[in-house]
Length: 168
Figure: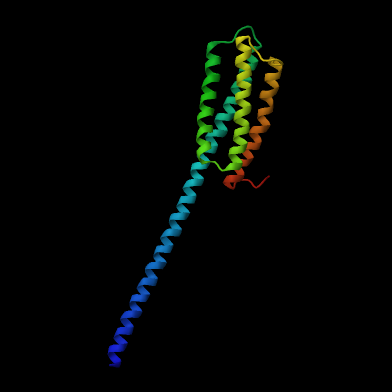
C-alpha cells in the first residue's frame, strides 16, 4: 500500500512538475514574442521617421529653391515638377506616419505638414498671379523659413520616441 501511494504521489508530482515546466515555457515564449513585437514596432517607426524626416527636408528645400528661382524671370517646368514630386513624397510619408506614430510625434508632424502645405499653396497662388491679400514672395519665403524650426521640433519628438534622445 505504501509503495502504491508513493507511486501515485510520484506520478502526480511528475505531472505537476511537467505542467509547471510547460507553463514556464509558455510564459517564456510569450515574453520573447512580446519583445520581438516591440522591436519590430520600433523598427517600423524608425524607418517611417527616417523617411518622413528626409522627405519633409527635401520638400522644404525644394520650396526654398523654388522661391529663389521664382525671383528670376521665369520658372522652368522641371523646377515646378521637382517641387510637386517632393510634395507628393512628403505627403505619402506623412500618411504612413499617421498610421503608426504615437500622438506626440503625430502632433508635431501635423504642424509641419500644415505649414508646408500652406507655403506650397502660397507659391502656387503667386505663380498663377492670384495671391490672397498679403501674400508676396517675401511672406512665402518667411513662412518657408519658419518650417525649419518646426521640423527640428518634429525630429526631436521622433528621436525621443525611439529612445535616441531624452531632450524635451
